[in-house]
Length: 141
Ligand code: HEC
Image (tube, rainbow, N blue to C red):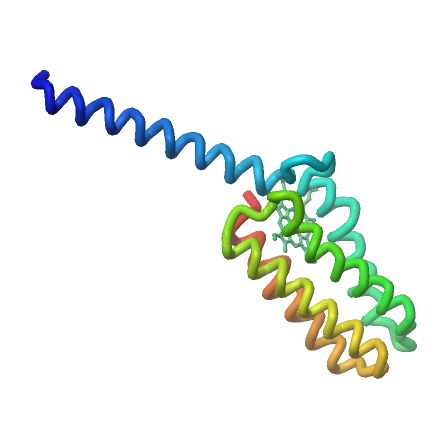
């Protein structure tokens, strides 16, 4: 091996090591934040998914309980911020879908205030499409 080839080889090793570190870091960020205990999976299972399921059921009722719709939308709104906290967010797709959760849940809250089922359903579609599904498509195995 010539001297410059050896240098090239070492440089590519260093690059590979760096890529490994970055990939590992991104993975750690999306499965858990940097300092808090809850994993993303636990937040999904314990907070995000059950709240979204409850909200869906509430919106399917004939007599919609708008107070309860507001409670679920408010909790999901906070979840949209939690998903970005503590260094959990690995990239722009994650950020965009979390912000979609924030925005759509705020729209559901507003619809609940107006007792507007059409607006609430339209916002719920955005919540699951631009929020849940968009993030899962990129980040959920
Ligand atoms: C910003 C990204 C993001 C958003 C938004 C998001 N999720 Fe998730 N979700 C994930 C990731 C990442 C996982 C995989 C976690 C793991 O297995 O470590 C996951 C896993 C899940 C799971 C499986 C949990 C389990 O038991 O393994 C459910 C159910 C779920 N999400 C529901 C939802 C619902 C419903 C919404 C929308 C209201 C939503 N998620 C929004 C990222 C997101």
